[in-house]
Length: 137
Image 1 (cartoon, rainbow, N blue to C red):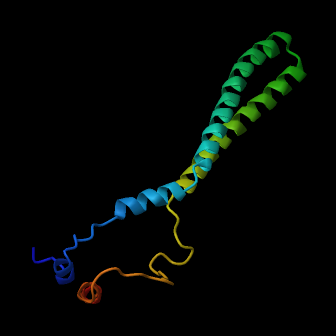
Image 2 (image 1 turned 30 degrees about the vertical axis):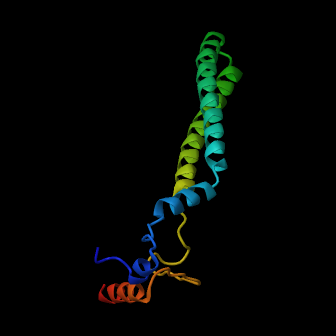
Image 3 (image 1 turned 90 degrees about the horizontal axis):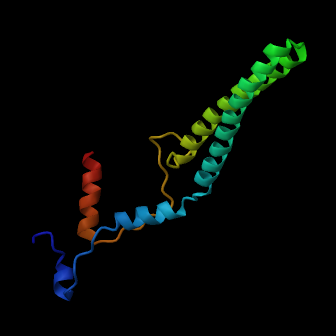
C-alpha cells in the first residue's frame, strides 16, 4: 500500500482507476460505421454483378458458338471485359475499406507529435515521477 496517495488517505478517498477501456469505447463509438455498412452493401452488389456476368457469359458463349455471328462474339467479349472490371472493382473496394479501418494518424511524420492542450490528473509527486520517467527514456 505504499502507492497510496497521502491526500487520498487523509480524505478517505479511493484511489482513481484507469479508464482506458472507457476512453477506447467512446472513441470506437465516435468512429462512424456508415463506411463499413456502405462497404458491405457495395461488396454484395459487385459480387452479385460478377456472379450474374459469369452466368451470362456461359450462356452467351453457347449462343455465339452456335450462331457463329461476329456480333455475338463482340457482345461476349464486352461482357467478359465488364466482368473483369467488376472483379477489379471488388478488389479496390477491399483496399478502400482497409484504408478506412486504419486508425487515424496525424498527417505529419510518425515520430512528431504536437499536443495543444494536455490535462494531468494526479498529485505533483505523480507528475514529477512521470516527468523523470520521460527524461530517462
